[in-house]
Image: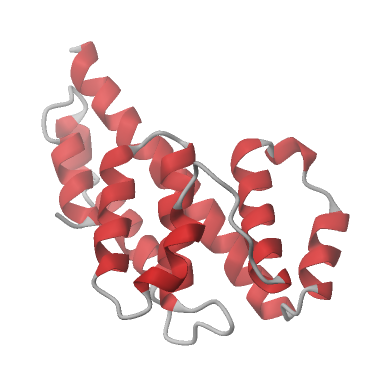
Length: 162
């Protein structure tokens, strides 16, 4: 299953299905946004495996296991999977280099306590070696995955409400 299939499945039985059929671009645009942040043409310092691991981590923190599983399966298919599996794991904080630790800390903060994020957190990312473009890409990744972790259960909640 991929992200688009998951979104379509989640929307398939909800009472808003007619609306979603007319506005089908919502699902395709959500899928395109996911692809843009997880597999951009110019990933900068945020590699594809790191992006998948962060996406899996956020999905796990938000308890959207179907979404988390998609990211974990994609990560498992890469040669670097073992290197990044600790980042995807929400049960522990494994030892990481400064660069990765700053990315994980930012992701955790914005996912779990977004109101506590400040300019100081951006400075920490800069000091850990991220360029401004990388910080923007990280913020986009975190925002998009958090959006998807709300969209999927939201669509499913509409289904159960009917």
